[in-house]
Length: 442
Ligand SMILES: Cc1cc2nc3c(=O)[nH]c(=O)nc-3n(C[C@H](O)[C@H](O)[C@H](O)COP(=O)(O)OP(=O)(O)OC[C@H]3O[C@@H](n4cnc5c(N)ncnc54)[C@H](O)[C@@H]3O)c2cc1C
Ligand code: SF4
Image (cartoon, rainbow, N blue to C red; front, side, top):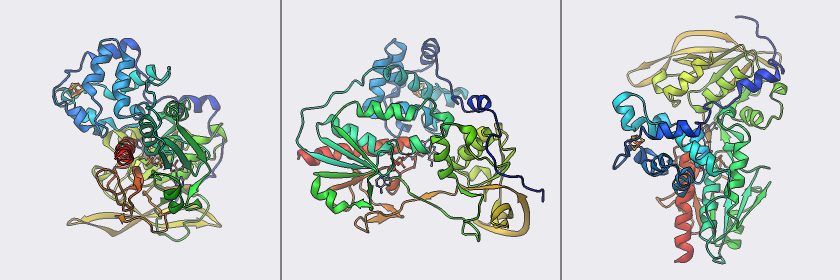
C-alpha cells in the first residue's frame, strides 16, 4: 500500500481555485436563448411539463422567451416554482424534463429547458418580484426550516395574505441551497440572492438560531400560530458501521461541503491528497468532484453495486469521470486502516450479486487514503418528541402534506416519499401552503 500524504490547505492557488469553481453551465446570452427557444415544438400535453415535479408550463414559458418576453416567461415559471432560479441551476434535467423532451427522444438533443429557465429567471430577478400580497387575513403561520420547502411554503402563504414567521436552526436561510449544493452550480452567492428575492414579497419574518426540539416546542407553536409547516430536511447522516469511524480523516461529506460552501477563501480549506468517497448518489459525486477541484491528487468513489444502480445519473457519473475521479464498482468498505489516530487507508471487499442479493466475496484489497468521505445517505431525526406519525423513518403526510396533527403540515426531505431533490421540496412547500390556505379560510 502506498504511503498516504498529509491533509493540507493551499494545494492550488487562488486563481486556479477561482477558475475551477466557475459556473458549471454558463448562462445563455439573449441571442442564444432566442435560437434555443426556436427549437421547441410547443407540444400539446407536453411530456416535459408532465415530468417536472412542479408542473411548470414549459412550452408556455419557452414561447414567451421566443416572443421576446423573458420576464413573462419567468412569471410562468415562478407561478409554479418560486425557486425556479435555483432549480434551473441544480435540477437533474437529464432525468426529468429534458429526458422526455420529444427532441431528445427523436434526435438525442433535447431543448435546453434548464438553461432557458435560467435565462428567463435571471432576467426577471434583476427587478422586483412580480407578486404582491393579498389583503392581510389576520392569520399567523409558523414555518420551521428556511430551506427550499419552507421558503416556497412561506412565499405562497404570504401571497395569500397570511403573516408568516420562519424559524431556522442555522444563522442563514436557504437550507441545502446555501449549505449543500455543489459550489460550481450556484456561484455568486445566488442562494442568498434568491432568499432575498423570495422574502421580497413581504409579510415574512425570519428568526435564525431557533431550533425545533431545542427551545422551540411543537405544542407551543400550535398554540401560538394558526398553522405550522415543517420543512426540516434531514439532520442525520448514515454511518458506515465500522470501527474507528471517529478517526481523524474520516469525514461526513455533507458537513465538509457545508464548510466549503461557507468558505470565504477556498485555499484555506484542508484537502486530502488521496481521497476515497463511499457512496453512489449526488453527494458522493459532489464531494468527489469538489475534492478534485480543490487539488486532491487522486479521488476514487467506491460503490457497492454496478454503476447502473447508482443514484447519481449517468450524466453526473460522466461529470465525475471527466474531472479525473475514478469510480470503483462492486466495492464495499470492510475496515478502516488507522495509524495513531489518523486514517491511512481502507480495506475494501469485492461484492457480487448472488441472484438478487448483494454479498461480499472473499476477495479484498487495500487503498491508501488520507481522507475518507462518508456519502451513504442522510436520515431524518425526529425533533418533535414523537408527536408526529412517521412512515419509513420520515414524517407521514397525505397528498396535501398534512401530518397526523390537525394544525401541522410538512414537506421536503423530512417527509416520507419525497424524492430528495430541491424541486420536489419546492413542490411540497407550495402544495402545503395551498392546503393551509384552504384550511385557514374554510
Ligand atoms: C451535498 C448535496 C448536494 C445536493 N445536490 C442537489 C442537486 O444538485 N440538485 C437537487 O435537486 N438536489 C440536490 N440535493 C438535495 C436537495 O438539496 C434537497 O432535496 C433540498 O434542499 C431539500 O429541501 P428541504 O427544504 O426539505 O431541506 P433543507 O434544504 O435541508 O432545509 C432544511 C432547513 O431546516 C433547518 N432545520 C433543520 N432542523 C431544524 C430544527 N430542528 N429547527 C429549525 N430549523 C431546522 C435547516 O437549517 C435548513 O435550513 C443535494 C443534497 C445534498 C446533501
Ligand atoms: S417536450 Fe421538448 S419540444 Fe415539446 S414542449 Fe417540451 S421542450 Fe418543447
